[in-house]
Image (cartoon, rainbow, N blue to C red):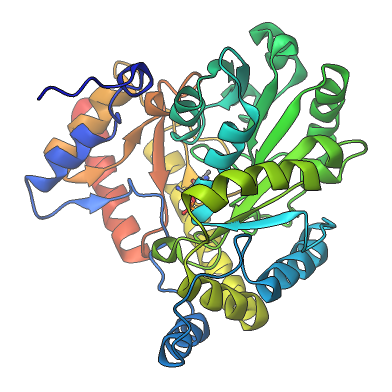
Length: 386
Ligand code: PMP
């Protein structure tokens, strides 16, 4: 039979990154700076807690919203680290990765025809998520001149005052941009004035460098009631494959998300919940060590790009930097060129939406030795072609 695919599925184009992976697979000497996941293993104590939970036969479903103990622990953690106050019973839901939490939010709050403004360049899953939920995407480009921070001018120019929701992600994937409290204030004011629901993906919150502290937009005046915060264990705790994240928000919103979650997921992976509990309980030092190492790599990569003569803005968060490609290349041509000629995989910025063209996303979630070699190869490519 032929499958009559839903319009929603047909509307979403295939991932722009796939072609690069296909080229990368053709050779065996590729250094990949293309991936968005930590090269570190999950801290041992968290893995051990997962193993112990399995030995004890803890393999049943948990409460739909996640183990109460874990929700309490998350409530304490976000209060300590980010001054966020949420009730573990009603205002926190534990999900299969932050990805599930973001998807639940789109499905819980987007009606057909609703407009979701997305600050771009942005993580590639938001746009398909909005389309799958029947909504329409409004791109709000950010620019290098603004250090890829979202501005009220950008929101106004894009017509975001008419939108129903705004998606932000700081520290940002793919640019590594962060937003300070002073940067967020006018955005919060805009959201209040135009009655926007804010979906704030803060999965890179721990990965903030240069003495900056992550500030959640939900902590600004009048924002808690209109913001859903997403976070998880994939990045800071190096737990991508364990699939564990969470959302924080007012009870009414979290209840609506839980209504979908309880029918579609039932509960987040139990073993991962045990690992997460331990991660919050005893892995602070591991997180700090990983963050320090990312910071070292960040400084190395930024300084090497500058030596090579490529413009790169000072990324202050996540584990990406976002250099400009030299004149005469599109980002895609440059990315394909260094992959074919030098065996270095990076992702062209266009993949991440408006504002991304002419740039490359370079992940430094890779050891320093590989980073050194990759940057030497990029330098050779630039020397050969400019
Ligand atoms: N948000 C952003 C900005 C990300 O970069 C990623 C992972 N690449 C996710 C969410 C998904 O995280 P998780 O593994 O928790 O689903």
